[in-house]
Image (cartoon, rainbow, N blue to C red; front, side, top):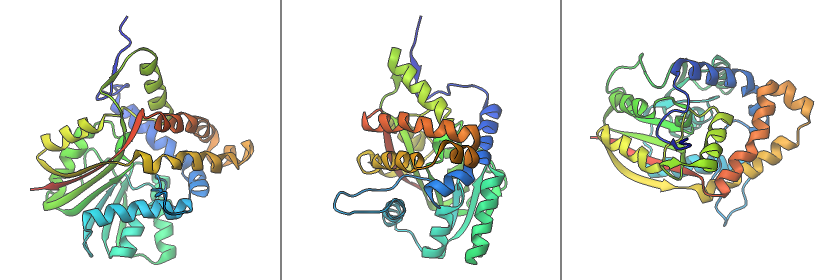
Length: 289
């Protein structure tokens, strides 16, 4: 019996089912995780020379990326997989960016819109849209396509990258930061651990950094920079587990239902995977020629 799993192939083959599962997860848990995790539901960048709060570390990660992008002011940005709009609002406020944020979750879009209204931010539009299709966007529309920890839940990473190239203007840039596997395939117990991790976080599959580079090059991007930030972000899972554990069983149940409870339980899996080097945090900066 072959127990091998390739990390460049979905572990579930039903794209529509996976899309529904992911939308349902965020519809049920977004309010809870916003309360626990704050406005940004992504990793923080922890430089050992600094003592940062989780929010400061999350914004430090965004700042490092925008510096490497040489982020222009007044850029037209597509935030693909925008979550509750944390990055969109940060880019709009700091760089006067005109942002379109897309998500599968109506609840996330509603949260993001209300936050924009409360802060009187008028340069962001949030839409319910599948990042794999980008159907409502014309070719050559954006200066930046921003995908911060969203691609891991995309059913077809290559298709997303293909459409990101299409909607970018010539000379436009793609920023992709995502969780990656440390190898192209797993066998035996390692395969079971990989599958369990993907199922816990509703990840259709988790390719390697090398596979992502292949996707980018195969879709005509010029890859400018590739970084492995695993050592700088893995502390986020220790902090996240501590934050979640500060809430009672009943509080977590109220915030996120049974899906929220499952997520808290599975945070241990991802923390261990990062600390053991089985998951990498890849950051890719690419340009449309």
